[in-house]
Every structure is written in structure tokens, then in C-alpha cells.
Amino acid sequence: MASATPQKAIIDTRFGEIEIEFLADKAPGHVKNFIDLAKKGFYDGTTFHRVIPGFMIQGGDPNTKDKKASRSSHGTGGPGGPGLKAEFNDTPHKRGILSMARSQSPDSAGSQFFVVVKDSAFLDRQYTAFGRVTRGIEVADQIVNSPRDQRDNPNDRVEMTVRIVE
Image (tube, rainbow, N blue to C red; front, top):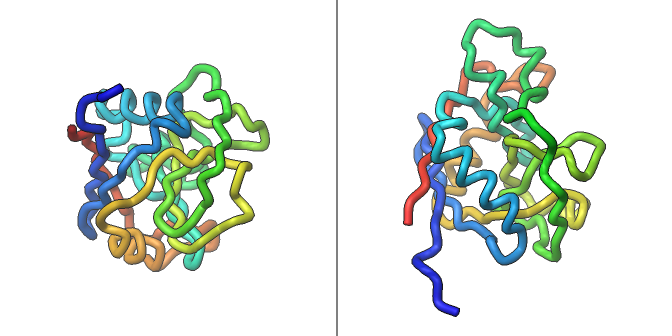
């Protein structure tokens, strides 16, 4: 069954672009959710609010759009509505994998996502992997090494815009 050219996401930051190829065959619901949010501009102006060197960068929280809001709310926001049904799959969380953040509940993912910068097998089949970095992993490396506070929030905002391309 031939389909159109697969869609990709371009995450643009002050450090450069990260290009993502989706794993639609592994996590179709999560891919659709991310693309729908990106096309609405949901991610534009959000930040990478959690960076842990040697592990991952996390972003996509709408609470990070307000530059004056307390950072204590970063990491708690989402698009509203019920969480996504987990689509745990056999994709290993190797360097460059894009996966959805969630709370304790497996079916709680909303808009927050993370990119692992180091192989993280302990996440396998616990979080939904739904994409991989095809270009710009060095941008993620720069973001993950940003000076940060004790809550792993970068001292200087690392804002993003996300666009979907065919």
C-alpha cells in the first residue's frame, strides 16, 4: 500500500533545527496527536523545560509559553482532555528517539515529549517512542548541556517552533 511522502517535523530552536521522522507504524495515535498539535501552532513558543545531561531534553508544555509564569508550573501542562492511550512498542530508546512524556498512568501522555541524547533502555516499553531524529542531534546535545537550575530547567529559555513538512 503506497502512501504519500511521510511527514516530518522540524523543531526550530535558537541552537538550530532538529528534524524528526515519525514512526507511524509503531505509534499511529501519538504521531497523529503530535502532528495535529503542531499544525495548530500548539508547540510554538513552548520551551525545552527539562534538560538532563547524559539523558534527555523534554518540552511541549503549554505552561512554558508565559515568560512571566512561575517555572514551578513547567512540566505540569498539556492540551487538555483525556490522555493518549499508550502505544508502547519494540522501538528501543536509543540516542535520538522521540518519545512521549507521561505521568504515572500509562495512558496520560498529552503534549509533552522528549528526545533521548543517550541510549536509555530502561524506558523501553514504558514510554511510547513515536519518532527519531534524522538531522540535528547535535542541537539536542547543545540544549541538554545548557546551564540549568536545580529543577533541570535551563537558566535561559530554549523556545521552539514546530512545523510539519511533507
